Length: 368
Image 1: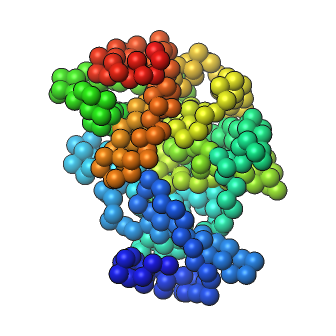
Image 2: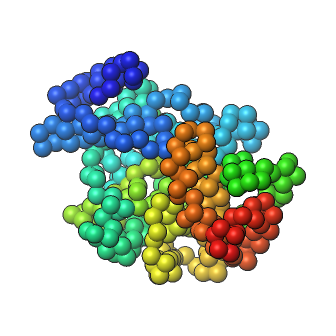
Image 3: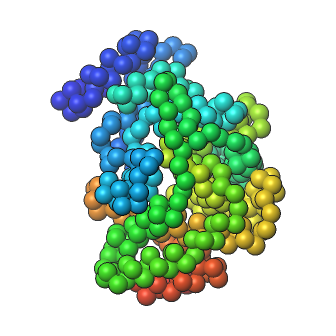
């Protein structure tokens, strides 16, 4: 583990590990990712666990329950987009709610919510993204992931789950959050692509999204994990039914349209999913979730796919330019292709018109 000179949380982390009964464990850090959290595997003989270190205050504050739109905008992006940030209370409460319903979120063995430390069940390294295609069949794993999503949608979740004496309120994935996320496209991606939008351009972009987001009102909301893809899913073949899918990175969960996590899975930013899986996986989810009005569902899915990919394009450029992580630029071509394909749906004509004017190079490069 890093020493105090290079890691100011090393001492507190070591004290927490010791107090939790893992003081004699070998501690190995995981490689970093796009978040400000860090993870360590604890090994002690045949026993393993995962330490999450999520320092509070390292991100903008989350959205208060009673905050107005103006309040959220004043607090910053996390409040606007309703992101939990490094809030271990959110992770712990949502994990407990999922495991109570038979889903394979990591069980939490020990917690210091105030300091931002959790010791989690080790669900292994069997990520979907690592197993496909050499170890596991892509279609079979993705079908199971879709069944798990449908089961989550069919489940009832309380608004205020609790764990370790702390509660967390699950809010709605509302129009302000959805729209604000798309503005990462105009703030970061469009300038990267060669054209800095004017204020009038940004207003046109917001207006276009305001025209298409009502398509999301066609179905009852369910729990949306918001980052459901092959790098966050673990294969647990020894378990049964939906519990075969281990769940990671769900602390930002909200109540929203059921298509969101489905398009996150199918239009993966980090790997190419076989194109011939999209329709059968959508069919499987639609039927297993007990939904009706397929035309409305497909329109909502297109809107959410475009919304998510617009956000991701902006996030990847921001990670490269602001956070010094240029490797994320290598992922842009795949997301660009997803985004342009999403915009072909008639419901997204207003967004496509503005995007074409703002970033003509995007459509040229993506082959449209």
